[in-house]
Image (cartoon, rainbow, N blue to C red; front, side):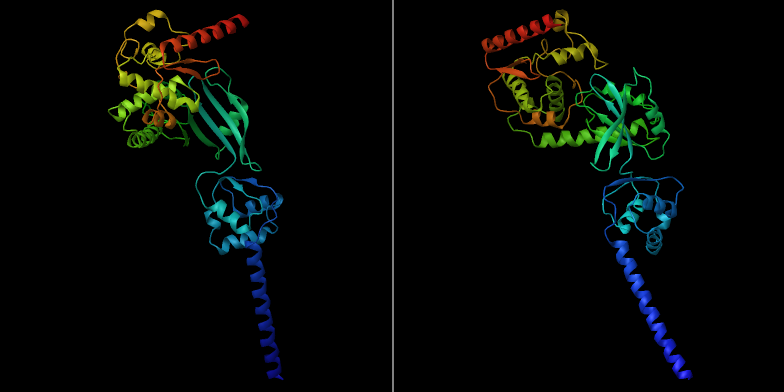
Length: 384
């Protein structure tokens, strides 16, 4: 009898262990299988939260089918204590294992709200935008000019949220004074800075955090520009009439200010290269403007004849060759154009009314182009 009972107990234990193994196997398979989320979502994990609250939020959003299994899986992987606060992009059909990895991996938030401080040539803007998980694109929530507009409530709200991301976007062609002035007005940064040397800051987008120093942001911009300048100099054409990376930086800054049309940068560069080769003065208005403003703000009016004739170190109607410093911070495309201009016979260009320029090889052709431009200007003035 006891032998029979023992045999039955062993059988039941084997069955129980078999069933338990099956349950574990099913649980592991379910934990790693595609989840029920039909559209990507932005999961926000508040500071001080835990896996229990996260699993509840995921269940309510339809991202997981079993919150208990989600928590058990996180425990089994020893990741429960690694939960990070922030906003995280959860892709469609993400498994529970993938979601646990997303919320414990660390690093910057991958979705949610972003504040972008845009430093432009003519104005500064602050943009509040939200990532749309379904498209992966940011949607603008608010935008304002901090120098002119009242601060919108949307900005104050996101500034109070711990997981808001911040970015500084530097436009091509801004001056170093404009960058310094804008950084001094960004309240989340700390510390003081002196005006960086003209041309040494790379136009780009830089992610920053609360408490970052202004000096550290400038250092990143300078390091990035060094990389771009050195790469352009190393890849330069042997025919380019420049003697140093510094001269390339100066020419690139002039190209940057002369055209906003990407496809004609190398043509503009060719005009200046041809003029330098022939010993001709560059005769470019942006350098004259820099001699007037020294890069502080925007001139906001046309140049006067006295300014075109007035001697300054940057007035290329008066001086020979390149000015002594850059006149703005050029981007990668202008650096590359200065290093490798198109091969053209052009030595003149003038605005053509479309945002680009009309190029010419002879003075007669140039004068004809100038006459067309003057007619366009007159027609526009009469329409206003």
